Length: 394
Image 1 (cartoon, rainbow, N blue to C red):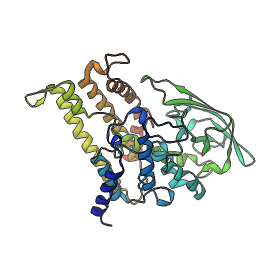
Image 2 (image 1 turned 45 degrees about the vertical axis):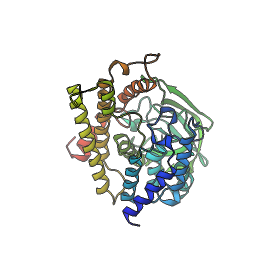
Image 3 (image 1 turned 135 degrees about the vertical axis):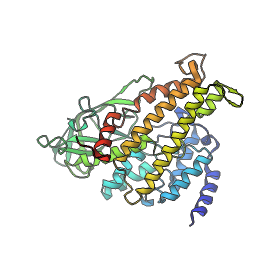
Image 4 (image 1 turned 120 degrees about the vertical axis):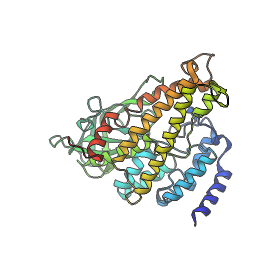
């Protein structure tokens, strides 16, 4: 099928199958997370997810045998463009799609792929990440969560922190120490297990935004089958680094077709600041929005060029640190411009003086402060760029 024929077919399918409410900005309580515990306020969120999953559009570039559509890079780009054209929401999101799924495609064995990937594609399982610990953040390889062999199982003890979404997650991909004598990077193993396993305890951490997406997670004699190890025992750092590259690409703005969560900067500025002589009334804000828009466009084209240049490898490289660093700075700056446009109406926390949209914007602005920390701090990314991309000496 030619690319134009694929575009016409995709456009017709989207027009017929994307519900009207899924062509509007995404509300926080309609987030398409999937998983065993999810409850949908809007039934069309689930309907849209199911329709896309049946078509393979939740993971369009994955092989069909694992729930994808088997699209190539050009077809995937066309799908994104057509979804953006009708302002369609992202049908499914989460670490299954952006992190553990791609890592399993690369490092998982046939049994692990067959068990987990179709469930991810259908939105049946919600995943969380067990990486950071109270004394192992930027120096992640210093982690001390222990896994000791007991027959066909590992017995896991330890603690993780900043475990995003752990309170709602079904499964976790986790780094554990299996060799206590080896150099710290060499004794780590990458393992998967169910969050309902006996001995797993989760405590949410309330953030400045008022939400609690991060958690501290405790493991006390958690029994996990040894067959759940991804890659080789004691070589989990290899899998962990690759997964971080997938994560950073996602955080940095590798981009999806939808998921918009409110009006654009320009729309907000016009509504709150107003026009004067055919231009936005505030010259400083006008300049800021123009620069932001130009930078967003240039960044998007750069990401696309990198995707096209890396078609042969498919996996991300250390360039993902560049995207993560720049993309998160762009996101934080966008929120600051939004604050400049909306003014004190974006500083409300509760009460009748603020609309639901304004209260949501306040929390979103505060949430962006974590962008340069999650997935590896900006300082970590700059070190990686210096060493691995620019080749500078230590």
